[in-house]
Image (cartoon, rainbow, N blue to C red; front, side, top):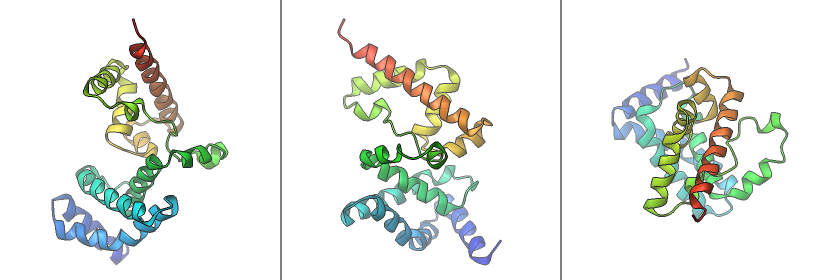
Length: 187
C-alpha cells in the first residue's frame, strides 16, 4: 500500500468513528474531483456545487457502512454519479443507446415508483408493496434503493452474479410497478 493510500485508509477509519477532522481532510482531498464530476454531468455550476455537497453529506451519513471493498474515492464518485443521474433523467435516456457491454455498470435507468409518490399514504402503499415482495426481491430493493449500494457491491454481498442482481432488480421493479398500478386504479 502506498503511503497516501495508507493515510487515506486511516482517515476513513477515523471518519467512520465520527472524527470530523478526518472527514474534513477526505473532503479536501476529493472535493475538486467530486465537483468536477458533477459539473461534467450537470450544466450549471451552482447545481454541480449543490450536488457535490449533497454527495459529501450522503457519504458522511453512509460512512459507517463503508466496508472498503472499493477505494473511498470510487465509492464517493459512485454516490455523486447516482445523485446527478437522479437529477437529470435525460442523461439516463442517452445512456440507453450504449451497447450492453458499455452500459453494464450503469444503474437502472427507470425510476423506482417511490420517486413519483408524494403523500404519506402513497409512501405507505409503496412500503407495503415492497414488504409484499418475495424475500430475495425485497433484499435487492433494500440494498439498492434504501442503502444506495452499487450493483457490484450488491453482487458481492449476496453472492449472486452481477447479471442476476440486475435481472432481479428489474423483476422487482416490474412487480412494484404492477402492484402500484393495481392499487392506483379506481375500484
